[in-house]
Image (cartoon, rainbow, N blue to C red; front, side, top):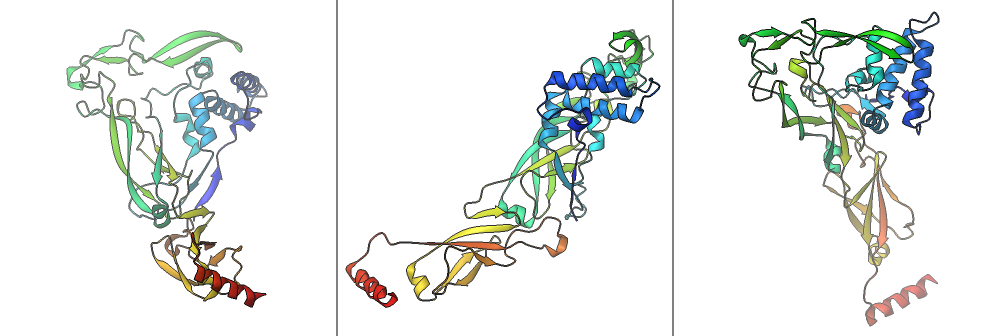
Length: 365
C-alpha cells in the first residue's frame, strides 16, 4: 500500500516563516549554529547537523524551490515487477543535491565536517511528464526523455587515460587537500578542503580525455522507461534511482524524479477517486423512460435508465466505475462515476411539436 510522508520541515528547524527572506534565513542559521556547535560545552552535534542541513537547502534558491514544490510524495511497491524502479522518495540524501558555494560550506569543514576525498555524486534531476487520464487509470510504462550528463565512453568516466601516467599536483603538494586559516564570526579556524585541481587525488593525469576535456562526463539526452502505477495523480513523483546525472569521474549517479502531470480530459473530470461526466439527453428520453448510453473511462458504454420524476439537478451515481485507487494493487479498487444530465433543447420547434407540448402541459396541470 502506498503511504504518504512529509519531508523535514526545514523552516521549522530554523525557526523562520516560509516567506522568510535570505537575510532572515542566514541570521537564524548563524544564531542556531553558534548555539548548537559541538565545540561548545552545551553543544548538540545532532541539532548542529540538522540546522546545517536545513540551511543548505533554504539558502539555495534552486534547492529551496525544489523543496517547496516537492514537499509531499508517495512510496510503495512497484506494480510492474522487475522494472527496477523505486517509488520511495528518500529525503535523507538531500545533502547530495549539490554544493553550497558560500562561506558556511567551507566553515563546516573547519569544524571537522570535512569533505570526503572521493569524487562527488551526480546531481539529482527533476522532470515533468504528461500522461493521459486513461494511462493514469490503467497504469503504463513510458519512455521519459530528458537532458543530462552521461559518462564519457571514450575514457569510461575517468576523464583521463591511466596508462599515460600521473604527475604530483603542485597546488596541494600531492596531498589532495589544502589547509587554510579562516577568520569567521565564530573566531579563527583552520580548515582543510579538497584540492579542486586534482579532485582530492593528489595527482594530475599526464593525458586528459579530449572528448570530455577531463571531466569524465558529457552533456547528452537520455531515454529511460518509467513504470507509472495505476491511479497516480498529478503532482505525485516517481523516483528512478541512478538515472540522474553521472557522478564526478566515476562516482555514483544522482537520481531522477519524474513529476506526473495529468492532461485535461475532454469528457471526464477527476474528483478524488471519482470521475464526473456530462451527458446530454432530450425530453423524449425523460418522458418515455428511455435508456441512455454513457461511456466509461475504459472506453466501454453502460446503459442508464432515465425515468419520469428523475431529479436532473442531482448527479446519477454509478458505483465502481470511477478512477483506479492508487495502491490498491491487483484488486484495482475504483471510485464511482457521477453523471450530470444536461437537457438538450431543440433549436427549432415545429407547429406539430408545439401542439404535442401543449397537450402534455394540460395533462401535467
